[in-house]
Image (tube, rainbow, N blue to C red; front, side, top):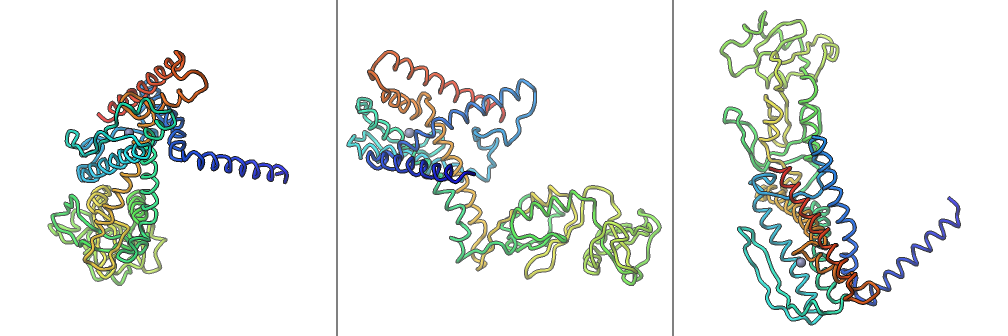
Length: 426
Ligand SMILES: [Zn+2]
């Protein structure tokens, strides 16, 4: 690129930043301007979500999960019951921050508050701030400050939640460590005969040959182990010679539930203890050629989708799991956090992590919804004040019409999105 263009671009950028900074500092409108800047992307977001959903509906295609950017959250429908605490806590925190924004801005603008408090809407705890009707007669910039302060507080809350989320492993460092395996903090629906070898607090480090240092690794290793064709175990002939092979599968493990039936490539069947096979194995194999000389590739005789996997733990014997992917995935609640002292449960960090994710996304959703010029939202007052700021008589008929049509448009957009969102859920 030409050197003069680079210099000109840098200089122009510097001038723009300087002017914006000067404007914001002089008028102390930083939060207000940033909240107002959210109007355009929010309208685009809602319009794109509505259009995509309508196009998909008309073509009879199913809405892909990643196409829905903004959608309602209903407990019991798309919110697991175990996350109800997160849900209520998040709504409470988001509304308190939002209303606090309005209250602080109103006090700064010397507007007396009629009421501030907490309420329970249906069963959802929330906060409220009641402003006097005299707010509507304030100059437009002062009105904008008060009405956009809630949105600005939600933007800040989203940013703070994301920053804490990002640095959470650092904050938790004195009590928890990450990157050295994953820990089990609870069991769900574990149904393997009502008993299992996993213990709460177990630190898992490897699934077969796949190394685990995070929950992403766990998901990856699990998918890999269950997607590929079942792998066998390279077993030395000297080990197999200790046992008597059977000619067919039905004669392999008759009435023996503690052993499993394995077969070699030569179609010899052996009734063996899975733990002995895995311990004596020199490696995993797909074919006979994958094993050293004087070894056989021993695989499970059954052809269903169950797999025998070996999960290694720190300071404990490996767990051998025989079963299906979904059962193992659902059975264990796992966390990236490993407690340095066993007294602390990784479940606590999991809760904080999930709560911060909820706060970040709900607070962003609050900001987006509130900035839209919709009836009963802050956006209704914001758009009216913005239009008032435009050149010309503030009470002209054109401005009144523009305000009215903007609110009609915004309300319609929110309404369509809510209807589509609910339709997709129910
Ligand atoms: Zn508000």
